[in-house]
Length: 315
Length: 243
Ligand SMILES: Nc1ncnc2c1ncn2[C@@H]1O[C@H](COP(=O)(O)OP(=O)(O)OP(=O)(O)O)[C@@H](O)[C@H]1O
Ligand SMILES: [Mg+2]
Image (cartoon, rainbow over all chains, first blue to last red; front, side, top):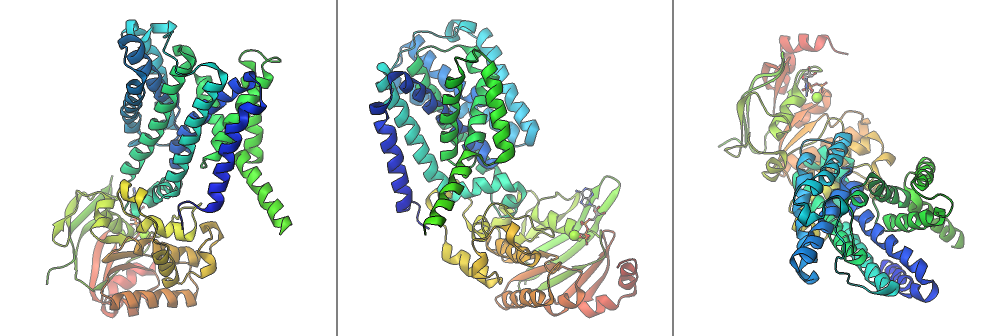
């Protein structure tokens, strides 16, 4: 088995081409929606690398992303650290923070694990308000964070490169034996142990990879929007948007979370004039549920089947 | 000669139940020992303690003269003892070859990332246990019970053991498949593998083992050559309640 086959390279190149040419075909307004879609895709990949593979369902991803966001925002705004340093440092801090979330995974599984991680998110929300509000900005958050892009097109290319780079590297990693082992962990943890593999090491690797992506996405996001508020970050709606994106698109794949993130972002945007506020979330909840009942493996597998049928018909 | 595996005064209690009650035995290199006894006698529980999936209440377990009781399963497997499971638990969405890969791949994250899977080895092993070429890319759901047992054998062999613990490898197999797996075990014995075998299929067991220990309710009731043990009155009566 070769790590990269020609047909995969062609698919990735085509994907990159479409993404790169996008600004030629769509308005700046649409481009701004794509920027959010790119960031959501990064967060969805991060979630899937951990939960979609190992089966340890994280409700704590806003916590991880939040660490990345706050770390770079505080370093850059309060201490004047240049972004070239604050972003990598923020990623490092996020990975350290993920070890906190990892510890319960050594003891609890399934819904208990999910609930424990949810507690991390809520705890973070409470803590940023009481611990050093002079640094975190308390409930109001942090404004005037240094932005690193100017204009829609610039922001689009930054977010697109980030998303594409993360997607491609994650795809490569998941094609190695490590990827196979992480998936196996999600299917039968005991048999992984019984095959002589340390499940603790594998879980830690998944947490660190997921946190790396979450921290990177969060840090860049902070320097794109320039302002953060704890209530929108440590928020159950944000959490569910990430998870639903993965489930709609197809978990256990790389392209699935991307498809899901794009679909969901544009759906929410399309619904905005009709359903302002939180009502929109009911709609996507409904769509996610329908899709989940009809095709639990998401849009990706529907597309995959169609392509195979079309190919089968053509031959 | 030093024994490869040495179990001394092993006791395992589950609350009021004593599932393993003072079991001791030595296993020498290339030897093949059967562990027999009726349902619930405590055979699988002994395997789980040797592998470190269960921690014994009392007693010691030595592998190549090293006390391994404090080691996790992965560390014991690295020291080349490995088991099959009575109820195979394959990785449902992985192919046959990928299932074998999990057993064979290194246990270091870095090596998992950088080493290519050894496809030739995986195919060879699958063929060796009698999984047809056509099955190599199938998932466990598409396999028969017999093929699942073969896959379980292959996954265990892929961890590169010198001592193999086989738990009911013949259950659910056709006569032809029993013969196939028996041949494989005999061939591995000829190559120097050490076995501890549990099976209810006594006729199939007979040609494979040197000695046997019969246990009932966690306690040893007989030991000796396979024929001797089978003829033992205590063994006969313990099996009477069966079938
Ligand atoms: N984890 C556990 N907790 C409590 N009791 C257990 C546990 N595992 C096994 N037992 C009990 O220990 C006893 C021995 O079980 P074990 O599975 O070792 O028997 P066995 O000889 O392998 O039987 P079989 O031939 O049916 O496979 C049984 O009474 C069983 O109910
Ligand atoms: Mg048993």
